[in-house]
Each structure stands twice: as structure tokens, then as C-alpha cells.
Amino acid sequence: MSNPASSETLGEPSSPRPRSVRASSDDEEEFFGLDDLLPVNLPDSRRQLILRLVGSHPLWGHYLWNTARCLSTFLLRTPSLTKNRKVLELGAGAGLPSIVCALAGSDMTVVTDYPDNSLIDNMLYNVDINVEGELRERIDVAGHTWGHKVEPLLELLPGSEQYDMLILSDLVFNHSQHDALIKTVEATLTHDHSSDPCILVFFTHHRPHFAEADMGFFPRLAKSGTGWAYERVVEEWAGPMFDKDPGDERVRGTVHGWRAWRVAQGEETGERPSQVKAN
Image (cartoon, rainbow, N blue to C red):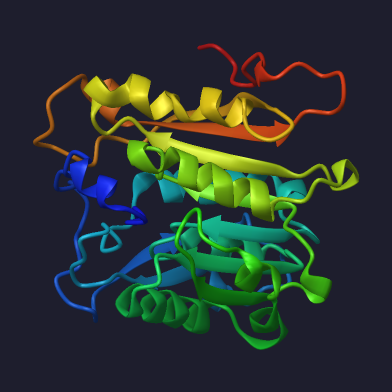
């Protein structure tokens, strides 16, 4: 789920192999149970989503990441984030959070990843098999290279509006692409404060020795545009995906979720007190 917008991407440390099941062919699927979190008017068949994974891919789109699972559960438990809102996911991979947003009542959800045919076709398959009827008209799939022109993404909304919420799931490990990510964020998230626009940035420090570089995304974001604030909203143990990686297992297995928003005039930028209750 990285974004090779420049040759700098080649300098990123390689992603290690995950512990969870890896698809060995395009026909293999994983399942995500929704239990009773989705609206009651959905059929029972949608209580378990079917997600096909790309058989193998250099952009790591062939994994269902623990971060996406935790983020999806958070979205379902916080319906105000998705209900009647316009949602854009970047680097979506299998597209789980986006599909959850569509099922949970977003006005429009756009699922994106690097414009590679295998990634786009797979996202389209997952959307088609999990989102049916009228809801299917409220979710679309598109390719996007971070930092490049966003007009094709905006044209998918009525009147070429901007989005109320952006989803970035397990993307900040790609340190060389932080500026490109922020450029897309700035160009696609609405400036209308009345809609309470925000971005959700969820990740795991899969490589503990790069944790500081992962977190470097937020100070860069805070200084961009008119300024941003951010707060921690989730800290959840999911277990390490990468058995062979060095470093503290608790660090490698904990999902961190942050919400960020543009500051209003006169509001300070930077980190806010955590919303996560201390154990």
C-alpha cells in the first residue's frame, strides 16, 4: 500500500513478511466479521465481508493488515464519522475500511490505491461482491498517485466538491512519501469547518526502530497549509504481523489511531491530549 510516486520509494526499508494468512493466488479470500456493529437493515449476508487479496504485489496490497481491521471496527463504533459523509481512502489495498464506510451509510466513498491494474481490479472485485443495490452507487474505485493531480477524484463527487473525511491506513511507514501524502490530503479535504472534516491516520510501528520516522508525519502535517491539530483516538493490541522482525513485540503489535483536522483561525497547531484512556 505504498505509493511509488518517485524513485525515492526504492530507498524505503523493505516490508517484512506478515504472520497472518497471505493469499497465494488471486482466488484466495479473507473474511472480516462485522457482528452487530452495522445498521440493522442490512441483510445477514453482509455481516461477514469477503475480501480477495492480490496474489502477490510489490506494494504490499496482498495482505489484509491488522491496522485495517482495527480501523474498520473503530469506524463502525463511531458512526458519526461516516454517516452522510463523503469519504476518500488512500492506499486502500483490499479496501476494507472503505467498504465498511459504504455499508455504514456514507453519502459517497471513493477507494483508491496506486493506479496499477491488479490493485484497481481487485478493489473493484471486493466492492462489487460486498456492496449491493443502491449502496453500490455510493462507492467508487479509482487509481491515484499521491501528490499528483486530484481533479479525477473530485470529479467523482457531485459538483466536484471535496471530501469530509480521508482514511490513511498503514501508510506512514513510507517516510519518503509523507510530503506527497500531505499534498493529496490538502487538495482533497474540504475547508468547510461546518462539516467537521478530518483525516484518520492509523498505523502500527511494524519496525520499532523507525517509530520516530513514522511519527514524523504529524509535525509535517501540522505545518502544512493553514495548520493542523491531531489527537490519538485508538491504541489497541492486535498482535504483531511480522514474526521475524526485530524489536519489542508490544510495539510491533499495537495499532495506533489518530484523528487530524485543520485548525480554525486563532487555534494552535500540533498535538492535542490523547482521547485514549490510560490503563
